[in-house]
Length: 585
Image 1 (cartoon, rainbow, N blue to C red):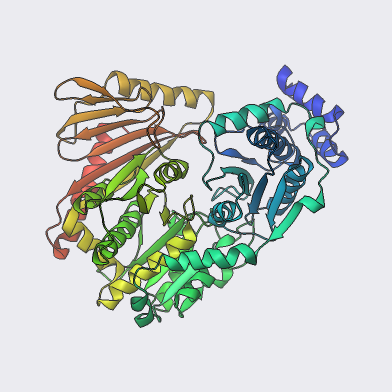
Image 2 (spheres, rainbow, N blue to C red):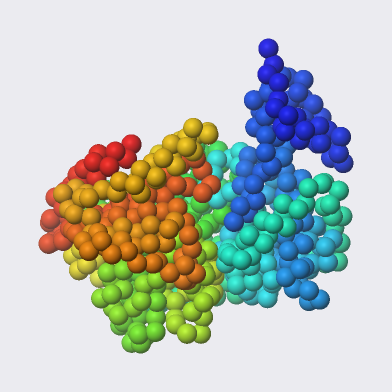
């Protein structure tokens, strides 16, 4: 028996069947109807694919809740309307890039056509390119906006659409809400100007590639070390994504001449045939790279995600085994290396800063404090770090920054996380360690001995559907109504509520305001608990997935390298105690 569709879903289906949609789309819809696949039909049409603060992301297919020619078209028409209204009477331009996913080239060309039909000049990359290069291109070409077609490291059935503004950062307030309002006004397929004007579209490639590579090269702080360690044994995989276009080129330009590409994953392929998920945060995605690294006794292994804004890396630990460093560890190592290098070069004047997100390790705050460098904390999302860089441009100098989810940025010529530049600096700091007869892991332990051993864990709970959303809301409400008095035996001394924008001193009972409108800070459903012994727990429902995430951070002094294993075991046990006590499962 076929279940009837609810009235609003049926109305959307009827609208697509009777409207000016192409024959193939209508045939696909009719096939879903004829096959009785009500579940798929409902999921495809029960709502309009939401244009959120970052853009679109969804499953490929026909329907109002899918990534297709018409949903991408409506988004681009709305964005075009907003751009033209924001820059009245001006000659405006946008840059467009895409990744290796299915339909990415087609969506990029479609967007170019629609922008051009709306009187906007378009710079379109001739083939796939990394997301950070799109950010660079916007600034290099003086564009008012830009977009990249990508779904980052989502499964193969997804694609997405990320929007950027003139500073090269993803759109933030007020533009994000303004764009959403314009997109929502595009209610008919007849509102979309599909007929492109080729004269307004310029193809770009080497004109951006060459200056970008030069700027990445300029990040190098110890080029003499690279010369001495040019034979550093590096394994790299792009996991079928865009990284192949620039990571090998950048490493070669720096002088690294012993780079081994994982051939099975070197060809761009939106089906990602060798992995379940093209996510370098997951060990399985890096297994082929690790196997190659073991077979050739490599010093370093690196993997970038499909749009090359995140990078995973690993090196041999003190037991001789390849160990993958997590995002907090690598972000900390990069900042540790840069702070030391800037100090040694006499470049620390008191006007430098680092930026990171509030759920990223406080080890970075501690190191910045030691070096007299300001560390700005923002909400989760690299667009907020970009906002800080923009606000401080010409006043303070950005050294670098990052977030726990494997995204890092060095220098300010890109305004998004940049796996290309990150691969370059990770290779350099590994060469620096080797030049001193050490490994990347030795550098990690030295950092912990100097600043304390910080250990972080992420607990991500999936709660699907309406009931799941209600359960997540209840969990946050319960934490607000009954905050823990102590965590793992240590009293809670501070509670930060970013939804209410309040900070509670639990010892005095005093509440102060977290400044709304401060760089990288706005109201957001995040709670943080800080204890007397330095434990931190952050609770944050995801804005894009049916998940609630808990970030747990603990710390202990590290007396020596010999004490690493024992201290590590203690910290892991403490994290588990926190998870059990707060019932984060």
